[in-house]
Image 1 (cartoon, helix red, strand yellow):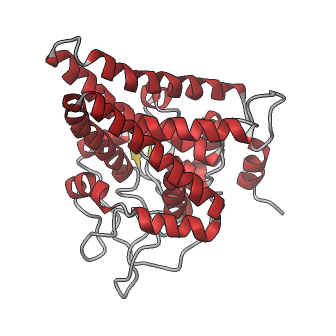
Image 2 (cartoon, helix red, strand yellow; image 1 turned 90 degrees about the vertical axis):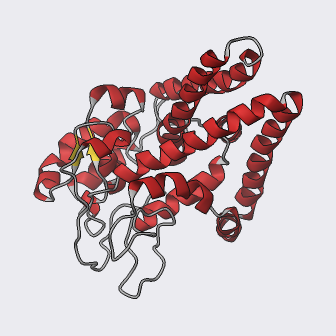
Image 3 (cartoon, one colour; image 1 turned 180 degrees about the vertical axis):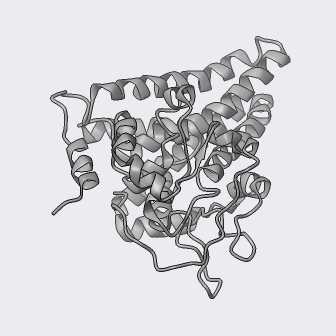
Length: 316
């Protein structure tokens, strides 16, 4: 017999009667947001020679924040629950997102699904590699999480496209091919912008890098203080209303790791459904958005001994 939480999840997988959207017409909101983000990206290039530097610095900072916002909100929800019924529309949207945030969405999906396999796990007793490629414990000492500044600013350079490509090719050579297409698309876009105005690309790249650092900062505090050994407590949640409205309920991260296929529009209902279990498991909750997790001075990483991994619902 299915548990109540499993029955809830399966109920959330029903499709709508929309001819365009696979799950709900509410997905039009992140789709429009993605289109506006793409327009903003190219709009910065247009404005660069036309506005004062101080204006561009403000726009550049907003661009950095928007990268993390897109990756953790729009793109993250898309890879778990593709927005469209049409495979072609999903493919085009994936390419659009790759250009906008400067990273292949197919590669991101592969990395993220590996993240769900390990759920920010610790190295085993022999100090071997973590299952999760981006685990906050991977480069830590003695089973502790890595320092947040190191994780935030070094993780970008630790990404290994070759490893991701090999994994993609093993699973699905066709998707590996499209991943290369997406990489080529955003690299070509950046190169063209650099050829048209090399001053602009020199201006853009630091903000591009900082945006991905902010995404890693967000990810760090979504797991710092969680319990890697208990599925219902694999993540740390934040229930700040404004944060969740703007970031498409990215704050419900403990809930997301427990049941990755629950749609972003149903996160609050799902949390209400399992809140008793969460309290019993002492699920960590931040009072602030994840990227500001360092403000919670009382938050301490759980230092529990590694046990055999428990099972939760698969991410895909």
